Every structure is written in C-alpha cells, then in structure tokens.
Image 1 (cartoon, rainbow, N blue to C red):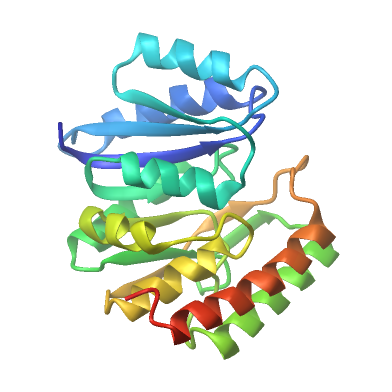
Image 2: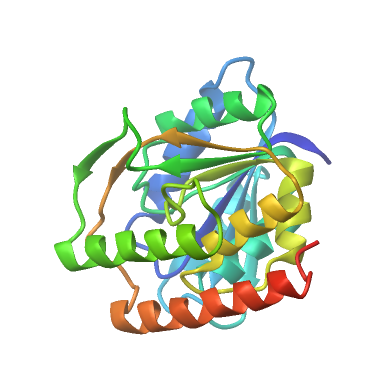
Length: 243
C-alpha cells in the first residue's frame, strides 16, 4: 500500500543504538502534523551482530517497520538503494541509524519536497547549520577535499554531497536509484549527478549534525575507492548511462 512518507534506514552492526533509534523514529513520525501514514524500511547490510534479530523483532511488533536484508555487507550505497527501491512513499528520506542528524530535521525536508523540490540535501556548511561534535581533522579535511573535487569535476554549486540525510519526491527517488550503481562512499555524489542529468530540482538545507564515534568506515580505503568511483561516474555520464 502507498504511504505518505518512507524513511530508509541502512543498518550495519547497529545493535547498540537500533532499538532506541526505531522507538524514537516511530514516535517522531507519529507526531508529525496531520499524522501522515508512514513506513520505515530498514536494510540490514549483512550485519554480524544482533541487528538482524532486533530488526525482525521490531517488524513483528509494528507492521509499519519493514526489513530488507543483504546476504553480505556490500556498503551503504547498496543498502540505501535496496531500501529506496522497496519503498512505497510519496516522499522518501534516508538517514543514518545513529541519528547523527536529529529527527527534528525531517519536517523541514518534507516541507521542501511539498513546496516543489525533487531532491533535498543536508548541508552541514550552510548558514544556519550547526555541528555539535566535529569529525577528527583528517576525516573533515578529506571530506572537504572530496566535495571540492566532486563539485569541480561533476556538479558545480553543491556544497555538501556526503551528508547522510537526504529527502526525495517518491517518484524522483525511485527514478534516481534505479539508475544508481555505486555502493561505496561516492554513492551520494552519483545520486546528485543522476538527479541533475534527469533535470530534477535540487535544494540544500542547513542541518544540525554530530560526528558519532565508532564509525565503521576504513578511511584510507574509502578515499581511494571514492576516487575510482568518481572516475566511474564521469565515464558513465559521458556514455549517457544516467539518462
């Protein structure tokens, strides 16, 4: 059945926060104005801890929580793609399971979609944004370098590709993710490139954000892989693969 809002939650070894996140997310979505119908599409990306068990228990207790499972860990891009393509919402939003961006940011993003935007991207560098706990300087420096390179090579005018908080008009989300191919760190950049290629309206909104310790990203491997993936995006765009 279609619903008003789909929230896609990629999950990889999140047993420490998963139950709290799902409870807070359900409570928040229930409290939105007009009480829209919603679903939470959780995608277990081959977790090795108790995440799969916790997700199964939550889905049994609440039919609005749906679970998709990848047999092995493939990366955030694969998990988000799986969730979005399984979603049924008129508006689709994906976010991190550790709530690095607070749930209060959901409403402004949905309002921007309702106002006519097709894609809304969280921007941690815009006026009005707030970072309450910064990343280690090396991660922040590399992230800024990746963004600058991506902006020069691929999509001028976008300030923050990698914030894990993005919303879409439902039909636009499924058109974009149907064409997406990347599973690694650069998957966010590919989404924006595809959205531009398809002529969708893109907006950036400031967000509150905090770095969560215990990240599972292997930094040097992620950076090297992202450079290769950027080259792949350039090639695919030149070949018209995203249209």
